[in-house]
Length: 180
Image 1 (cartoon, rainbow, N blue to C red):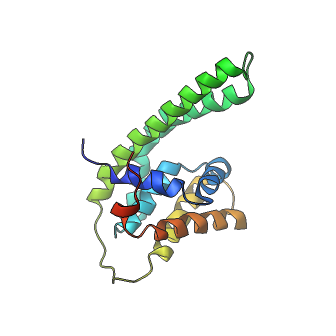
Image 2: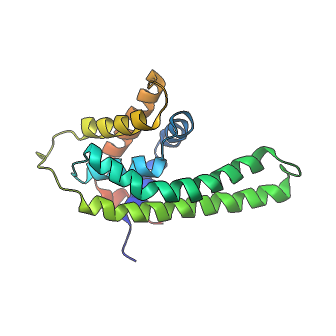
């Protein structure tokens, strides 16, 4: 299989200051698909145009795997944190860690599926040096708005800005990307 730059990007950005908590809060509060959101951010950084139709295609591609596999593993992992009995204990914590690893592996598969979607998007003519931050904030806001059942709060806007800013700080994707 070819190198998955999207997976490497997701690992890199997720380790940036305040990004993981921002992603998790958006996931919990707005029901966003974090891998899908990071895929859209990555596409923006690659100079790709993302229409609402493109986002619908991406959701259609990712949604079955995300809902049937990733979210199922996440529910099990979350349940093992507090119960049912005999959880939580040392034995069930070991199981929870294995489920967590399986959840991460499932997200990697999802990102691999979405990598081909990114490569099919049309490139936009972007003037070198033109800030990409507004485009990233726009696409993330569209994703959160369509996933959330409530109006976006200021805290959620702040989370979007944290993630978008971190993405823009990853200037040379080859030098800074974490190799899995």
